[in-house]
Every structure is written in structure tokens, then in C-alpha cells.
Length: 293
Length: 287
Image (cartoon, rainbow over the protein chains, first blue to last red):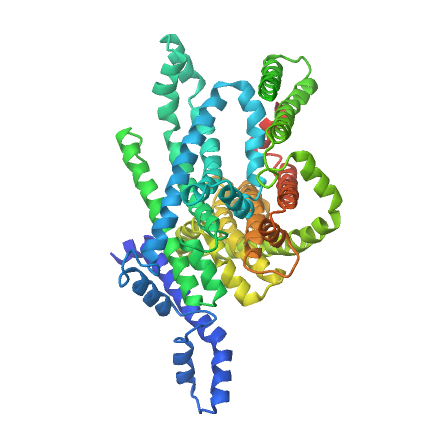
């Protein structure tokens, strides 16, 4: 029993997480204490170490908020606020999530379509692949604000501009993965299809498409995480109206560190959920195809 | 009048490419020139189309300036671009990249000796690499001030986890047989590390270095949106967008793209030199 526990992953992960929380609290006390001591001295109060630690962990605007402060803030802004309220993180999270999902969907469709063209046309392959790879060395996230502002200028606003940034980021892993996946059938498998007198379409649907599935899902996991990043950054320049990115920006303007950290944690939870959903879809499809690992 | 010409140009370039890829060249040198020429023709066509469409349809320059205008802007404002490049790339990106990748590499070697830590840290590292780490930018700006150290800090955190995860799995890449061979040579832990396991891990490490090269640039530029001194690529982009000086923004983007591609290219070259034995490099050389 204990052996199974120590050799599994649960105990090591929990240990590391516990260690991280301890380090976090240590840092919180260390980083917040200068300001607190300063206040004590101004108020000319006697203070003890215990009191100092207690106060540093409960500041209004700490340099590094303690874990429980962030937890309380998340609880307050998700469960205790109405969903429609402007201060509810569920509301902001939904705005970010909808842009993410739209961008992810467009990116996936575009990526798969490009991959299909690239696999079936040599000219496409030779002329586009290098540019697709080069397109990712362009720091698109850095240009995101301009795309948003420019699209706003021609009357496109709201969900779509953000989604387009997510699209740009997420199509790349899908193209690369799918090109690899659609080419993964071996020569003898392709030859077999040839002896069946299969048409190109038949070869595609019965051989290439099924054998590309593992590659597709691996890319989708990367793509969904990256499109969330795109959506968050896309929200930064729109004047900080709504969304998790806007919460980050307003938090940094007004020095609300607790707000920044809670937005960060909600974004992290969102990313984890999205990756897990794709992972679950992956497992279901693989099992249906008899490829379960 | 404009539209047919544009379409004709597109088809002509496409037909040229189709013809080129179908030709068989006797000498490998010519084939290599062909492989280079095809994407270049494609890119040049795109640029010409861009120029023709923006000029022909009178697209407002605020929306999309023609490439010639962007080029003019680049040529005219080299000092500003150079200062921004220095601030963002040479100071923030490079220092953050070296520190982030270096520390992750050392941590990976340290936790490699403890299976317990490996099992605990690896899933977490994988998890963290999927998170929107860029969100810590405002916090780092708050902690380390407006100048480049805060940007370098963001880059360090962004590059740390991909490097950690890849190095740890790379160190596990050498097979049992090879490690047993090292044991029969009575080699010490460090000898095995330097002579067998690090070289075997090199493809994984370079993979992380390549991923990180683009991440680092993005991290530094985005972090500048949260506050900078009055220099830097991210700063320039956000202020010039505000003034609707879009040609300057595009000039900055061109510099960023060039820097990003060059950075990536340098790492690929180093990779080819270091992991010359790897199948992916060997097959690339053979064709």
C-alpha cells in the first residue's frame, strides 16, 4: 500500500505542491515586511515577529499576496457575485473563453484545411511550409494590440478580433501536426490502397484521416492552450473593458495585486480545464478507434 | 482593370511554382536552388500582391500600409529602431533567455538524481508550460520596475518550464544498454553524464531552445505593454498604434520578425553542428 503510494505520482506531486505553498508564504512575508515595518515605525507601535507575519499576510495591497488571500478573492468574485456583475470573474472568464473557443475552432479548421492542401499539392508544400514556419517567429502576440485597434477602425469589434489572434496562434501547431499525421501512413499501406484501386478521396478518408488522429489531438492540446494566451493578450489593448486580460491590466493600473493573482489563477484553471477536455476527447476517440494506449 | 492584373500575377507565379516543383533536376545543387527559389517566389508574390492591392484599391494606410511605405519608414528611422532593438532584444530577451534556459538546465540535472522529485516536478512542469504565463508580466513590472530587468524576469519564467521538461526527458533518452556499457567502463556519474547522457539529451534540449527563442521575444515585448521607459519595441508598438502611425508599427514588426527568425536560425545552425549524428539532421543533409 505505502509502496504503491510512494511509487505513484500523487505523493510526489502533493509534496512538491506543498513545498511550493510553503515557499510562497515565506516569500510573501519577506517581500511584504519592509512596507509593514515602515508602517509600524511611522505609527510608533511596538511589534513582535508573530504580529509582523500575521500582518504581512493580510495586507490590503501586498507586494505578493498570500495564497489564502487569493483564494478568498477568487471565492468572492466567482461564487458570491452574480454572474452578470462586472466584478464577477465568471463573467470575465466567459468573455475570454468564448474568444478562445471561437479562435480555436477557426484555427483548427484552417489548420486542417491547409494541411490537407499541403499534403496533396507539392507546390503548396514547397512554397508555403517555409512561410508557415517563419510566420511563427513573428511575435504575433506583440502585434495583437495593433490588429485589435486596426480591426476596430474598420468596425470589427468585440469577439472576432480577439478570436483572430487566437486563430493565428493555434493554426500553426495544427498544420504542422496534421501534415505529419496525414503523411504518417507507410508506403506499404498506401500501396495497398492503390491495389484496391482506391481514389484519392477514398485513400484520404479511409487511411490518411484515421491515421492522423493521434497527431491531431497532440496538436490540439498545444493549440487550445496557446489560443487562450492569444485571447488574454488580445484583451489588453481594448481599453480594458472586459475579460481576464482586462482584469490583469486594471489590476496593474491600480496596484490591486490580489486582483491580478486571482485573474491569473482563474486563467490557469481555465487552461487546465481546456487541455483536460481535449485530452478526454483524445482518449474517447482513440478507444473508439481501438488505438487506446 | 486592377483586379484582373492582380489575379493574373497570382496565377502566373503559381504556375511558375507548379512547373518548378514538377521539374526534375539532374544535379543536387540545382534542386537545392529550386527548393530555395520556390518559397522566395511565393513570398515575393505575396509582397507584390500586398503592394498592388493597397495601392490599387486605395486601402487607407491606417489600415494596411503598402510594403514600400514600410520599407521607407525602416530606412528613415534606423536609430530609433536600433535603440528599441537594443533595449528589448539585446538586454531583456538575451539575458532572460540565457538565465532562464541555464537555470532550468541546472535544475533539471539536479532533480534528475532524485526519482521522487522527477515524478513530482514533471507533471507540474508540463502543466505550467500550458498556462498563460504571460499574465505574470504586470506582477514582474511591479516588482522589478519599468526597465529591462522586469522584462528579463518574464522571459526567465516563460523559458524555464519548457527547458526543464525537455531536459529531464532528454536525460532519460539514453537506453539501458548504453548506460550499462558506461558502467562496464567503470565511469563515474559525471563521466556518464557528460559523455553519454548530455549528448543523448541534445535533441530534446535544442527543441526547447527553439521553442524558447520565440517565447522569449513575445514575453519581452508583451511585458513592455505594462510599463517601460520610453524605449523598447513593445513600447513603440503600443504608442505608435495610439498615434495611428501604422507604418512605424509595421517597421517595428518587421524588425521583430527579422530578429525572431535570425535568433531561431542561429539556434538551428548550432543544433546542426552539435547533433550532426541525429537522423533528422542526417536525412536533411542527404537530400
